[in-house]
Amino acid sequence: MKTRILFVCMGNICRSPTAEGVFRAQAELAGMSASVDIDSAGTHAYHVGEPPDARSQDYARKRGYDLSPQRARQVTVQDFNDFDFIVAMDKDNLRILKDRCPAQHQHKLSLMMSHATHSRSDVVPDPYYGGASGFDTVLDYIEDASQGLLQLVKKA
Image 1 (tube, rainbow, N blue to C red):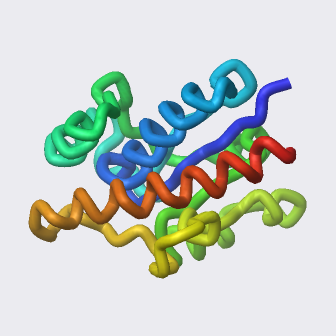
Image 2: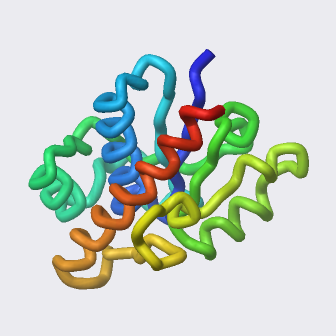
Protein backbone atom coordinates (compact mmCIF):
# COMPACT_ATOMS: atom_id res chain seq x y z
CA MET A 1 0.00 0.00 0.00
CA LYS A 2 1.31 3.44 -0.94
CA THR A 3 1.87 6.25 1.53
CA ARG A 4 -0.02 9.28 0.27
CA ILE A 5 1.33 12.81 0.86
CA LEU A 6 -0.47 16.07 0.07
CA PHE A 7 1.37 19.41 0.14
CA VAL A 8 -0.80 22.49 0.71
CA CYS A 9 -0.40 26.25 0.32
CA MET A 10 -2.92 28.98 -0.46
CA GLY A 11 -3.31 28.92 -4.24
CA ASN A 12 -1.33 25.81 -5.25
CA ILE A 13 0.87 27.65 -7.74
CA CYS A 14 4.13 28.38 -5.86
CA ARG A 15 5.05 26.55 -2.66
CA SER A 16 2.96 23.37 -2.71
CA PRO A 17 3.72 22.47 -6.36
CA THR A 18 7.39 23.09 -5.58
CA ALA A 19 7.12 20.76 -2.58
CA GLU A 20 5.37 18.14 -4.73
CA GLY A 21 8.11 18.31 -7.38
CA VAL A 22 11.01 18.31 -4.92
CA PHE A 23 9.59 15.49 -2.80
CA ARG A 24 8.81 13.40 -5.89
CA ALA A 25 12.42 13.78 -7.10
CA GLN A 26 13.86 12.98 -3.66
CA ALA A 27 11.59 9.94 -3.30
CA GLU A 28 12.76 8.72 -6.71
CA LEU A 29 16.42 9.15 -5.74
CA ALA A 30 15.74 7.20 -2.55
CA GLY A 31 14.13 4.37 -4.54
CA MET A 32 10.75 5.06 -2.98
CA SER A 33 8.75 6.36 -5.95
CA ALA A 34 6.71 3.14 -6.19
CA SER A 35 5.70 3.34 -2.52
CA VAL A 36 4.50 6.96 -2.37
CA ASP A 37 1.73 8.94 -4.02
CA ILE A 38 2.41 12.68 -4.01
CA ASP A 39 0.05 15.55 -4.78
CA SER A 40 -0.49 19.20 -3.93
CA ALA A 41 -3.48 21.50 -3.47
CA GLY A 42 -4.48 24.93 -2.28
CA THR A 43 -6.78 26.00 0.53
CA HIS A 44 -8.31 28.53 -1.89
CA ALA A 45 -9.65 28.11 -5.44
CA TYR A 46 -7.89 31.16 -6.90
CA HIS A 47 -5.89 29.28 -9.54
CA VAL A 48 -7.72 25.95 -10.10
CA GLY A 49 -6.61 24.38 -13.38
CA GLU A 50 -3.60 26.66 -13.83
CA PRO A 51 0.04 25.48 -14.05
CA PRO A 52 2.50 26.49 -11.34
CA ASP A 53 3.69 30.10 -11.38
CA ALA A 54 6.26 30.62 -14.15
CA ARG A 55 8.84 31.86 -11.63
CA SER A 56 8.39 28.74 -9.50
CA GLN A 57 8.85 26.60 -12.59
CA ASP A 58 11.95 28.52 -13.68
CA TYR A 59 13.70 28.33 -10.31
CA ALA A 60 12.74 24.67 -9.86
CA ARG A 61 14.01 23.82 -13.36
CA LYS A 62 17.38 25.40 -12.51
CA ARG A 63 17.69 22.77 -9.76
CA GLY A 64 16.47 19.91 -11.93
CA TYR A 65 12.79 19.78 -10.93
CA ASP A 66 10.01 19.76 -13.54
CA LEU A 67 6.76 21.27 -12.25
CA SER A 68 5.17 21.72 -15.69
CA PRO A 69 2.75 18.75 -15.62
CA GLN A 70 1.07 19.99 -12.43
CA ARG A 71 -2.24 21.88 -12.33
CA ALA A 72 -3.64 23.72 -9.35
CA ARG A 73 -6.56 22.30 -7.44
CA GLN A 74 -8.32 23.04 -4.17
CA VAL A 75 -8.23 20.78 -1.12
CA THR A 76 -11.38 18.65 -0.86
CA VAL A 77 -13.03 16.97 2.12
CA GLN A 78 -12.10 13.61 0.54
CA ASP A 79 -8.39 14.55 0.76
CA PHE A 80 -8.54 14.22 4.56
CA ASN A 81 -9.60 10.59 4.12
CA ASP A 82 -7.31 9.77 1.22
CA PHE A 83 -3.94 11.13 2.35
CA ASP A 84 -1.67 9.88 5.15
CA PHE A 85 0.28 13.15 5.47
CA ILE A 86 -1.19 16.59 4.77
CA VAL A 87 1.62 19.10 4.94
CA ALA A 88 0.95 22.86 5.07
CA MET A 89 3.49 25.45 4.01
CA ASP A 90 2.56 28.01 6.68
CA LYS A 91 0.52 28.54 9.82
CA ASP A 92 -2.40 30.31 8.11
CA ASN A 93 -2.99 27.40 5.76
CA LEU A 94 -2.49 24.91 8.58
CA ARG A 95 -5.19 26.72 10.56
CA ILE A 96 -7.57 26.55 7.56
CA LEU A 97 -6.84 22.84 7.19
CA LYS A 98 -7.45 22.24 10.92
CA ASP A 99 -10.80 24.04 10.65
CA ARG A 100 -11.88 21.87 7.70
CA CYS A 101 -10.38 18.56 8.81
CA PRO A 102 -12.56 15.99 10.58
CA ALA A 103 -11.37 15.21 14.12
CA GLN A 104 -10.30 11.66 13.25
CA HIS A 105 -7.82 12.96 10.66
CA GLN A 106 -6.25 15.89 12.55
CA HIS A 107 -3.16 13.76 13.28
CA LYS A 108 -2.31 13.81 9.55
CA LEU A 109 -1.72 17.57 9.53
CA SER A 110 1.72 19.15 9.93
CA LEU A 111 3.79 22.15 8.94
CA MET A 112 6.36 21.50 6.22
CA MET A 113 9.13 23.12 8.21
CA SER A 114 8.46 20.89 11.22
CA HIS A 115 10.27 18.25 9.13
CA ALA A 116 13.30 20.45 8.41
CA THR A 117 16.67 19.28 9.64
CA HIS A 118 18.79 22.42 9.05
CA SER A 119 16.61 25.45 8.31
CA ARG A 120 15.41 27.44 11.29
CA SER A 121 12.24 28.98 9.82
CA ASP A 122 8.95 27.55 11.03
CA VAL A 123 7.19 28.31 7.72
CA VAL A 124 7.88 28.27 4.00
CA PRO A 125 7.38 31.96 3.09
CA ASP A 126 5.13 32.85 0.17
CA PRO A 127 7.35 34.15 -2.67
CA TYR A 128 4.46 35.33 -4.87
CA TYR A 129 4.72 39.08 -4.22
CA GLY A 130 8.43 39.16 -3.42
CA GLY A 131 11.59 39.20 -5.47
CA ALA A 132 13.51 36.43 -7.16
CA SER A 133 15.45 35.44 -4.03
CA GLY A 134 12.18 34.30 -2.45
CA PHE A 135 11.90 31.42 -4.91
CA ASP A 136 15.41 30.23 -4.08
CA THR A 137 14.59 30.43 -0.35
CA VAL A 138 11.45 28.36 -0.93
CA LEU A 139 13.50 25.71 -2.70
CA ASP A 140 16.17 25.71 0.02
CA TYR A 141 13.57 25.22 2.76
CA ILE A 142 11.58 22.62 0.86
CA GLU A 143 14.66 20.59 -0.08
CA ASP A 144 15.65 20.50 3.59
CA ALA A 145 12.18 19.68 4.96
CA SER A 146 11.60 17.07 2.25
CA GLN A 147 14.60 15.11 3.50
CA GLY A 148 13.16 15.03 7.01
CA LEU A 149 9.71 14.09 5.75
CA LEU A 150 11.19 11.37 3.57
CA GLN A 151 12.80 9.82 6.67
CA LEU A 152 9.43 9.91 8.46
CA VAL A 153 7.67 8.29 5.51
CA LYS A 154 10.30 5.54 5.40
CA LYS A 155 9.37 4.66 8.99
CA ALA A 156 5.61 4.76 8.36
